[in-house]
Image 1: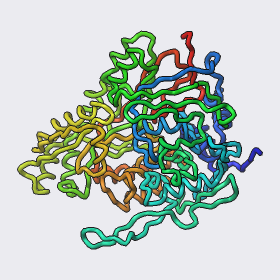
Image 2: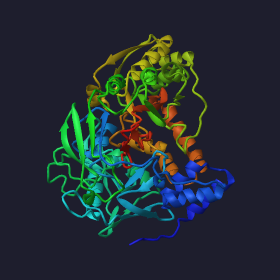
Image 3: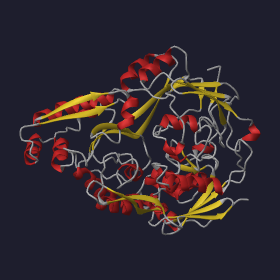
Image 4: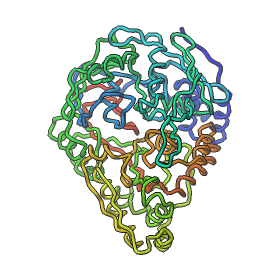
Length: 570
């Protein structure tokens, strides 16, 4: 049965803003779809306002005549794939997302569309979200997908025992509580848990989320890669997706060996509810995280595409015949972050001194040949709709020396920074540049190289390290995951109630220009508290054979292979 809902009153505001030129088409489409307007209707609406013909890419006719069958082989690291709620690498989700699915799906155009949730509506105050689930979805074992599955997942995500990063995205559904333990100073420790009344079961296919604060980004948050929906029996059957790959998606797991291979085979058409799938099989082959090794596997014909392509490998890729190089402008980055609860970084002056040594222009120029944007040390990217451009950070070694002297380090400071090159050797290069930049202030920086797997064992514990962060469509999403007080992925130990309050305010504002004004304060607080040095915003590349049709570069590096097919004649 098709549901109809009243248009949210803030849609009229966005229509006016687009007509006045106060927002661009991309931000208009992103915002009105979050408010419950279907993507096709949103594209048509934008076309009428701007006098241009826009077609929703998700509904566009494919180029050429798709052919069913064939195997798509991709070079990508094959990692453990136990619990989607705890995923911390996109590669894990790219295997899993072929099996288990998400309530929403954000496309390469940054527009979020319904998926397992067929529609949603939001109250005027942006505090109550009603999700309407599809009624034609079956799990691979024949069970009907319904509201109990979704409630089960939300409860797991918000349970502090789970330790899911999703708690940071849905903070408005939680409350603070005392754990019964005390810290080193004897003060009660606190945690966060789901608030009573946060979830409401309306009927078998409808639930409501009751937030204690306004939030616009719920549909986008639901596509965050740890938000895959698992079956309600997940914990009873061992809580390991790789051993019990029960899902609603178009593929099932046929073979799986960490560090070697993952083979996914299409389920019968009658067993899958969703958009047409053409591929018979997807094979991920592990050649390591290094993009040079992935490119070598592609060049030798072992695979049809790679997951990643580092900028240092671009010239070699460009020399290969019959090769597509796909690029996405992203909010991916790596932060040289300091734990504010570990010496000497517990002293704000030390952190500010390190920032003062940084020449931000050096990183995009020396690492990416000018093809990337510099960072401003606040983890909000220029492509984020709420981004407010602050003054460019200025290198000032005299200021750095003075701050270090005030902090008792007038004779210099020796620091060790951990690096695992988790997204390529550019991270080590960034630290080599930082090492040269801090030296004139009397700081000796020692780079401690380690295997990427070893770095991920300590990424949120090491006092000083460089951690890669994936693209999120909103800066507020990244900040909620990484910098809110007490959230699982807060790797810096940062806790500032003023920052949390300002971020709450930003998340409640629909109009991107008005939200940007509040984000100025959010960005400024984080920048002045100096918890990170952010070298660069990086574009992402991968290569593929022209035989593979329907591929697009997704800024999150997500693999959604609906509509992808193989043209053997190409």
